[in-house]
Every structure is written in structure tokens, then in C-alpha cells.
Length: 116
Image (cartoon, rainbow, N blue to C red; front, side, top):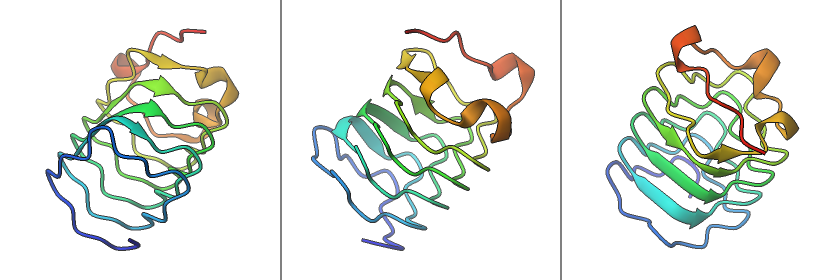
């Protein structure tokens, strides 16, 4: 599914374990709850998408997540170079076990409260 164009798609409840969604176009997509554990979403366009459920080990490096909502488990998620400006991370768990802190682009007002 690399490079797929799935804007505003409703993938709620989908099992996308280990799926290759590299450079996929998913603006406004509903992926909550979905199993995205180990999925490759690098450089995906996820503006205003709703990503929830299991994001354990997901690769979101370089992804564009402007205004997106990320909730669920982000253990070992790769958010290096991701654009998280005005993203909503309320409800995101295990952020301290992902690499978003040092590398993701965020505006100070969008910094989430980290839940363990």
C-alpha cells in the first residue's frame, strides 16, 4: 500500500500490523482504533487524521501530522523528523519510550501531557 491515496478513508478497527504505508496520502483518515503496530508510515501525509489504538513500533519518521490526533500506545514509535505542529497527543501513552522528544517539530502550545 506504499504511496496509496486514502484521504478521509474510514479504517476504524482495521488490522494494519506491519503494513507498508510509506508515503501514503491519508489526510483526514480515521484510523482509530486500529492496529498499526510495526506499520511503516514514514513520510505519510496524515494531516488531520485520527490515529489511535496500537502504534507500538510504528515508523512515522518524516510523516506530516499537522492537526492530527494521536492517541493510544506509542511505545518504541519512531517520530523522528515528523511534523507534529498543532497535533493533539492527548491520550497518547508511552511517549517517553518513543523518540519524538528530541526530533519531532512541534509548537510549544501543542506539547502533550505525557501519560504513563
